[in-house]
Length: 443
Image (cartoon, rainbow, N blue to C red; front, side, top):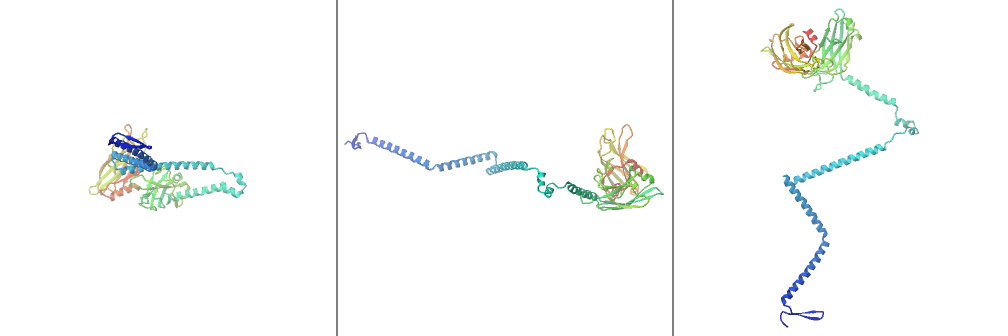
């Protein structure tokens, strides 16, 4: 048999193949590779069938990696660390969940409210009558009992509100020979606290209605709710017949240097209702006043400072501002300016005035004026501050005045005394303007 030949047996038959040996080897390799491919394919299909859960886990990890990669890229673009971006996302999610929870809860409450309203029904009194009168009274009580119970607290509250204002003791003595009425303000008790420290600085104004031409004021008592005044004022030239048509008023105020004085309360005594033939001494409860400050602020208020240097004999007055001035012009405004006059024994020693402020009821000046007053005369002079409405055509009309110094009383005396007690130091204070006619009588 020739070399490079092989003999194959197939079905008991001998086949003599006469192709070269290298061709045979090539054919063997092809068959082997084909069989290996077939085995690999079958094995891979078996693996896919048996290991499908692992493939699912791998896809989840891939998605998670994609999310983390996207988060990292977004954080790099925003210029913040990855943990910071994650924190922001968590906070946003929590806020959104909280809003959703709140909305759901609110909707549930509304539904419950509607359901409860639907379930409410009126009480049938006819059916209640079958249960007896006792049960009916529980369902519908007697109206008379309700009104009586409702009125009792109101009376108690009104009594308490009156008691909170305090009370005042005074004495009246009428002299038929001189036609004069002596009024003594003794003391006050249980006044309300109007200051921040829980106290008040009370003083009393005494005048007669309806004219109010003559007014008296007590001294200011600092930081007390039970001041003792013991001051007597005399209304002269008051015939008995005229006195019967007048009402005596005690108005208690809380002194405040830098703002308007608050009125605590008042006591009104119609003289026709008392027996002036006898001495009258009694306590009266203070009554509330409608409006702040009563009628004393109808002319307005003015603020100025006083400074006195004893060694140089120099008195400096700084007119700062005024407010709530009386309307003097047709248009409902005024053109105010301030006159300052230094008086002694009824004679004018020196006079000065501020600039005119057009069309205003709340002028601001901040203008300073100086007067030479020797130390020997400072207790004998008067300082008259007058607010005047300027009129170009006619005569200028005074709005109101404030008189300080000699024979002053009340807040004006207090301001003057504080100036003398604090030399070289400016003392500022608000004053309520008074009727110019009353101020002229004082002068």
